Length: 334
Image 1: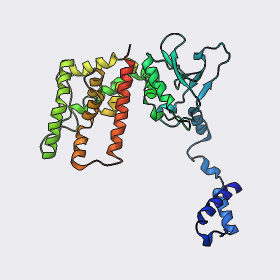
Image 2: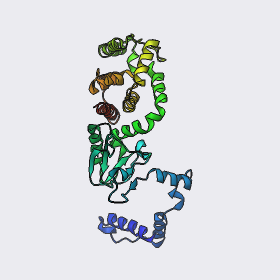
Image 3: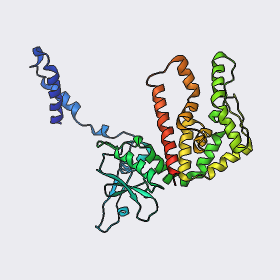
Image 4: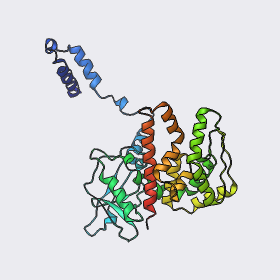
């Protein structure tokens, strides 16, 4: 407590010393005692009133990075591991960088590729070995680990790793629910919605939609055999049952990695058709982003860009769409 008070007084003295007339000023003893009381740690503030000790201990365990050291020199590299906490998937900082070298290698069983942090094999939050289908994807995720700073591991800078954990941990358990949720929103897809064109402002948007989106709708018709229905209602419309079933069949045939990427892109795009366009190679990343932001970009052109708003939204969309598209492409390499 005394040391904390002394540090505060030292800081005050350094600030006051820039004025010679008061540089020798000394705080009264009562003021010194008040400063000491303020600087003292308050045990009631150390833990929020709504968090019990048991909950704190659980949170601490969830944020722990588990390291398993080799029991003997003869141990295989897969027998030594580093397991990421569940908070890795949520995005919070999970601890300081604890490794020096990041490498990739073929798994001991010859089935897939693994990422090594020094001598440790990277594992998922549920302690399952992370095995990637090809070397390209393993190296891409290794690069995310390599560029982590020493002061902390930041999962929000590792989108490929997050998608890999999702594909391994969540998709196999919730595949039916993911597909059901995607199909539930399919009828309100972004590319099916049209501005009415009953004013100067909306006519401009409608013309841009017809120019940019109509070719995608034509592709949907040629690829799946059913013409999409466009609408101007806020409540959406209903697509042909044949088209709905065809899209659902495509999702059911995807691998876990493909479905994880499509689901991530659909959440960012508010569209299932746009991710499927990327999946089939009909759309590139930049073209997809242009379609997603079509209406908003027209507003920016008309009224101007809001710094700290539009620019951040654009950057976030670029990261989310690009990382999922790259993950999709890398997971499809034989």
